[in-house]
Image (cartoon, rainbow, N blue to C red; front, side, top):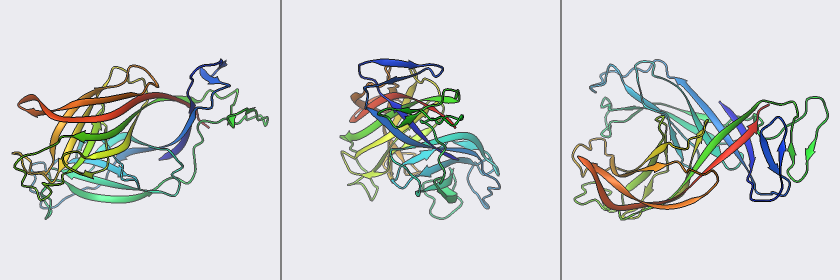
Length: 313
């Protein structure tokens, strides 16, 4: 697990200079810069998971995922893996923070799906283990440079250091999806105790199976979030599609909803074709009922794609 700081600059116009060896552009007259903190959590595997008296049809090979939640209620999840007693992922969870998160704690949970061994697991999900993970106290410095020969050069206006001999740099693409609200979600004949005020969350999945989720919000017919989902890509994601789903929890209106979760609408969102441009969008949600069928609900959001380059110590 590592915590890094990433600084990047946005060009609008004016004089642009190319810094040799780095393939890195900067603008002397540009004060529009942003710094974020990125915590990378590389999930390897879980050892010795055994549930006794498991009546699930998947008792021999459990279906597991790892979720990580921060103190703001954002939830991040690995893909689903099959395997007992040692499910294995070997994949990253990356969490972006707009301010320094040192001192915060994260909640990690290992969740087994389609499991009905314990009392009260009507949703089919069992938390087989959890842990509290503190954010690392030491920062892996990324986004500023110090010369190793003792001579430090200061880049005016930016408080920005660079190293002429440092070729250890990395570039990532970050797609920011600002979820606003969903309009006109109505479920008829809802037998859930929360029928008047549904519990909703929005999930976004990429083509690699990574899943990102908003917090849970209560509200019908217009649940509102006004929160960001940030997805980091190690290579250019232009051309990829994301799957967005609005999920209602504790809902037993539709047949087959023994888990209590119903996908009330979904949409396919293409990654923006241009870097840095923000797009305001309102799209219709569809629901799978045999074949895709349009529903009246709509989701509004803002989407943007940025490229961030930083240097590593």
